[in-house]
Length: 334
Image (cartoon, rainbow, N blue to C red; front, side, top):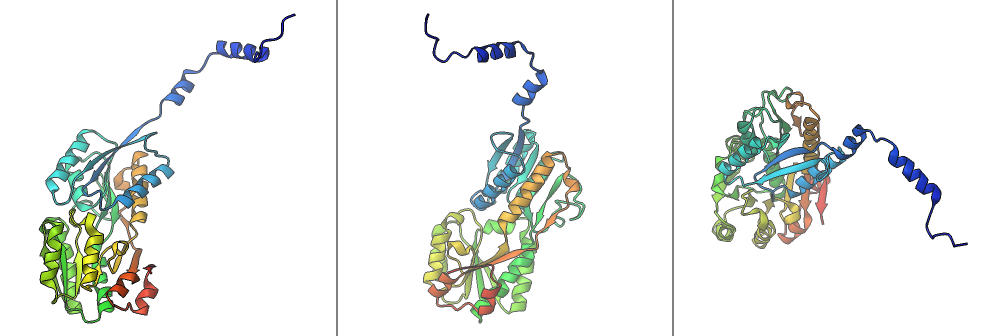
């Protein structure tokens, strides 16, 4: 009598044979193999400016059931706010691709470009200081059309930053912003500047602009300004963003107070939580993918803001932050 073969299971073999003869519903096969893949066009004029917000946006979409690589594909187009014509070209390109939603990942410039490119594809913008005034939506509560997003009014927050700056410095007569001249051609600048100049007048100070065309021009500009300037603001020019830590070091060596990203070494910043705004953007994109029209999604008005103070920088420039301001800060870097 021969020995039984190793690994042979007669019952399993019979069960497999029977299973092979049973019909399988075509609907089950389709459900298993067909997952609707959504395409989101991303119009990002400056990816370096909001890389952290982008990661939070993607993570929130995943939490809402839209996973990149499974049922979601991003069509990303990068440009810079220094070249608005490039942003408009990319918007037209995304509209031609007939994506399901366009996410204007920065703000007013990309949102306006997207709106001009299409009146049918839903558009969600990350933020705009004045979406009604800029012609993006009909009203905050009833956007109308195909555009919605969040409203962050830097026309209100930056004047508050100047007030904080005066509290810190005490005697404040002249503040200079270093940026690209192209900033003044952006759609929001006139209103922003009007609010800033009005606040500066109330605080008894002059707010001026110094134009640079590269990072290499920043230090010579500072050398021309010192002495005679009490504080410096660094703008969002694309060629300055990668060099913020170096710029902060230049300011610290000259003992100049500054408004900017505290994590990069600037003295303080007052702004909304960009991660919270990114999560709201993801929520609106998910709703649009689910069939809800932007006209039915009221503009989210951001009202919570963070004051972040860098105490290390304050000590380095021999400046004492008032205790009252530290108590109001949501975060202090020691």
